[in-house]
Amino acid sequence: MPTLLLFFFFSTIAQENEKEDKNVKFAGIPLLGYNLTTEFSLGAMLNTYYKVNREDTISPSSSTSLIGVYTTNNSYFAAFIQQLYLKQDTWRLKLIGGVGNANLQVYHEFDQAGEYIDYATLMSLFSVDAKRKVYKKFYAGLSGALVKANTTFDVTDPVTGEKLVDKQIMNNGGINFLYDNRDNINYPTKGLQVYMNNRFYQKWMGNDSSFISIEFSYNFYFNFKSEKRVMLLRYYSKTSIGEVPFQGQNVIRGDDIRGYSKGKYRNKQLYSYQAEYRHRFENRFGFVAFAGIAAVVPDMMSMLTTHYLPGAGVGIRYMLIKKEKINIGIDVAVGRDDWSLTFRIGEAFSR
Image (tube, rainbow, N blue to C red; front, side, top):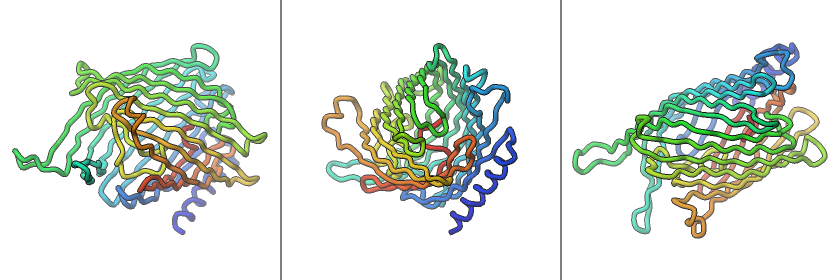
């Protein structure tokens, strides 16, 4: 009940701002949840949407996001996300900064048995991503990030008698490409979005390890003769090659694929396939239903023998800012021996 009251409280605020037709619109949501790893969580997310140039009718609205969360297993994080769309959508800029401490777990196999090992990662991050339109709907750009991650495992070193600690600097630079002809970035009803980002982690950047990360996503949207009934087909992969540290591994968690929170499945390469149906009623309410399958493997050849991980779930939606097509919602999903609960502003894989 408290969650629903807060849900509608923030909805009322957003509707009032929308009626005033201000240049800056607000969307907020409480982040209340529970999963098997971080336990109960409490936090908030506040987004603002605005036009940098009100005479620019082509660029999507820019946004500023503030997020803060604390959990009962003493994990926490705070972050800001700044997204700018400039000069008739010629430039797209994104800044992310954040700090946090994640008390999680990793699954380690001993012979034919296995067990979870607790660990804590203290991380700080600042990243910049800039893209420029080079031809019609095609963009190219550069990215860079400063990352520091210190991980303490709940395992005692037999020599020193102290817990094992892995300190990593993972600064990186990259090249990215984007094709985006979606009809709306917040709530697409048709179109294609293809994205690739190559990140390079090199020792001359101050890192302890050298490796490459290649991220690729393909999102195809179509509707059933109405923007109220939309289908999304998605492929996503993230491949790390080289001296990949523990913090550089890819984990089944989050939107690819929903339904996993324990962090049991991780490796150098992640591949996922997902479909999502989005339905909006005549009022502001709607729902989503999604299902997918994923795999994490050390190399491509292991895809032939690995066990694939299914995930499926449903969510409710409420259109908080109608003019911007900004939804808030809650997703519940189940995976193999796991489940997840996600609060969100905006749809998965948007913006």
